[in-house]
Amino acid sequence: MYFPILGESEKLLPLCLVGVGRQENQETIVRQEGFPFHQLIFVTHGAGLLEYEEKAIPLQQGDFWFIRRNTPHCYSAAEEPFTTRWVCFDGMGADG
Image (cartoon, rainbow, N blue to C red; front, side, top):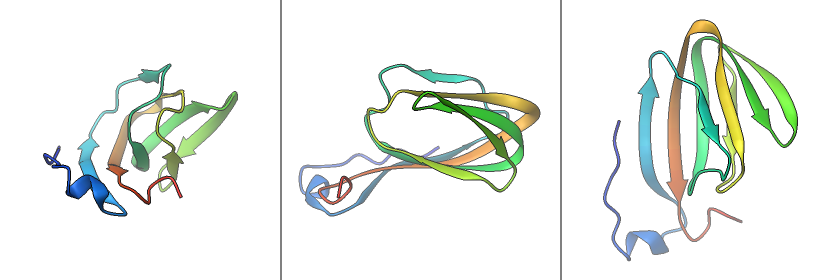
């Protein structure tokens, strides 16, 4: 996992990377208040279930999803190993 330290000047960029990583056997994630950054998550192996905006969405190998900052969600494995790759980002243009 990689989490760069951002100064005030980086936060003024249209987009800036705030985290990138992988989870080889993704544990259940429950974020009732959401996450402070936008997320893009990709499934590389296995299958899972995403609960987002009152929907249950099955996830398969090759799927990816985008979650806006501060949006409640949870995801978990349906078939292990449920392996994910993810990127988190921010910036002045991230909400546009």
